[in-house]
Length: 84
Image: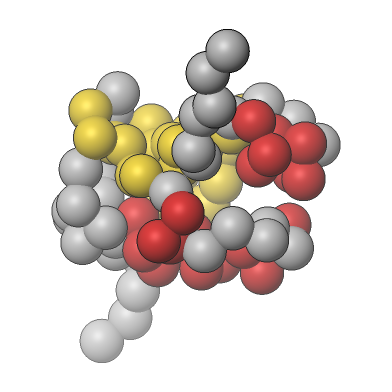
């Protein structure tokens, strides 16, 4: 079985934006879930936050880490937000 790469728009916020050096990017990946995609991005950008410190969102709605991803999805990983 071969994996087919899909294209995703990934949005970065707060610490992840600083570590990635951008607020969004288009990513080509065979990731099937936000968990798989985040593992790839964490390796690429050396993110220091793990899954337990983030909430994934697909197409602007919070979701489970195992939510299936489709070509063209917008994916965000939301870090903790502190208020003031």
